[in-house]
Length: 221
Ligand SMILES: C[S@@+](CC[C@H](N)C(=O)[O-])C[C@H]1O[C@@H](n2cnc3c(N)ncnc32)[C@H](O)[C@@H]1O
Image (cartoon, rainbow, N blue to C red; front, side, top):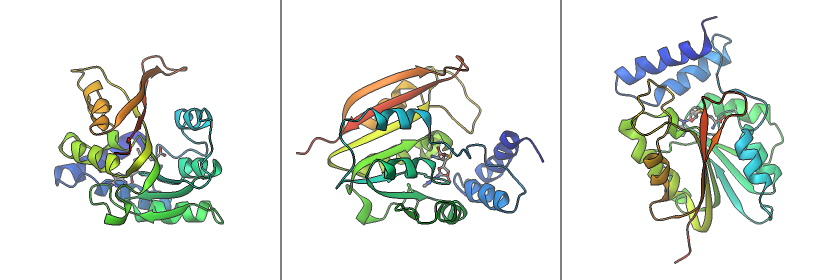
């Protein structure tokens, strides 16, 4: 089987050349479901920074709603649900959602197909917690501002947004996917929200990699 990262980039390149920046996700998940590809971000464990952040919260999610954007196979959605939130996980790829439902049979998470770039009206401003981890970085510059606006639009009054993304230096060229976020991009999640914390965290194993971890809130008017 081809190198998973290279194969992923090849699939993405074909769809990007056809000006369709999101179709390659379903291509990849569909191939993986037939054993013809490996999804590079397929891990049993939740994202470490999401786990550390939610674990540091003093209150649990009882009585609160959460949405996990681009949930893939559901690793972070399951984590958030374990913390007591009534959790929706959505992804643009139907095959990922079908696999998430099968992997986590009996889970309280509501897994749905959904497009961050064309969100259903009823999701807007509907969630006390929004988790965005490593999805915006998988989308090219042409749709990035719309994707960030989509993430922001999910946050309810008094709600919290947690964002995690691989970081790049200002002006640093990248050949994605992924396309890591620079400081201006991570800060743009804050339009209309209040930034509670924004850290750039160096990877413990590979110090050449660093990630943004940001917590933002929508103050009730
Ligand atoms: C790099 S993967 C990360 C998956 C997951 N967040 C994780 O950390 O395991 C990006 C995910 O975003 C999803 N995605 C991409 N564009 C999307 C969109 N417009 N709406 C919803 N999901 C999207 C992909 O299908 C994929 O599952």
